[in-house]
Amino acid sequence: MRKPIPSMDAWLKEAKAHASAPKIGMYLIHNGTVRQSARAKVRDGAEDTKPVTGMLFSYDQEKVDAVIAETYKLEGIYYIKVWLNEGQLQMGDDIMYVLIGGDIRPRVIEGLNYLVGRIKKECVMETELYAEE
Image 1 (cartoon, rainbow, N blue to C red):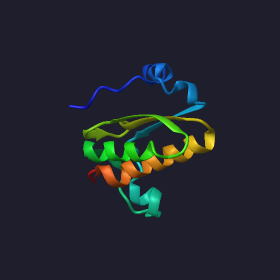
Image 2: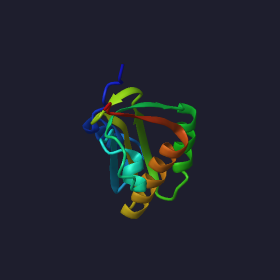
Image 3: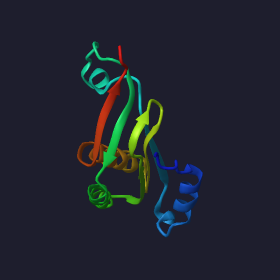
Image 4: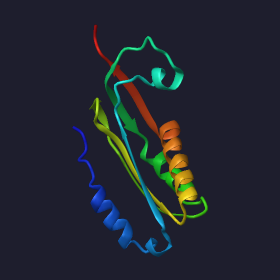
């Protein structure tokens, strides 16, 4: 069973009411979804891949928490919220939402890239499911 999708309006309202809000000049939201193009195609240019129909997705919460803690050490990052889905997902389903807030645009963009990159590399297990022929 998939987890309920969070409301970004509610997340932003919560973030703007947080004690860190006076320090924050920018919030960024990342919404990763299951795409039809296989990872090997979009990352490595492998044109002979079958279309993706879904994915098996799981994560290690302890590792996610550690990566979030490390991201808070970046200069200018003051607010982070992460939601990860789990189970068998279909094309178009939400994989993750990340909200990050910080003082200035370059730091927030860098922080989002750092956080999502580490989550994808170190914390999640993704197995693409392909169309049957």
